[in-house]
Length: 106
Image (cartoon, rainbow, N blue to C red; front, side):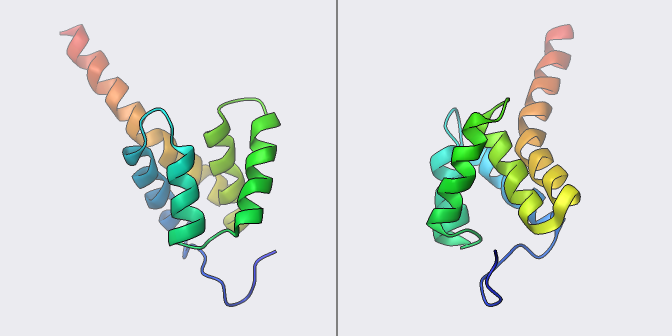
């Protein structure tokens, strides 16, 4: 559970922008960046919370970091937060692939 004085995201938009920034920084291995940002810099999670969520993310089907983003978003804003966090993680790669597809088609 969240402590009353602990920092947390202000809105689903804040989650979206944070996870978009994380996706931009990571290439192939976003986990270390997510851990540094969420635990050490923003302090949205304690190290124990991060490890617990990461353990669950690994046993869920699908990409581990996407599962982790989903759980962090859900922790703060329920379904809206989960959608915002996952959309933030996937927005940049989706745009890159779409641009490459358009360039390839021409």
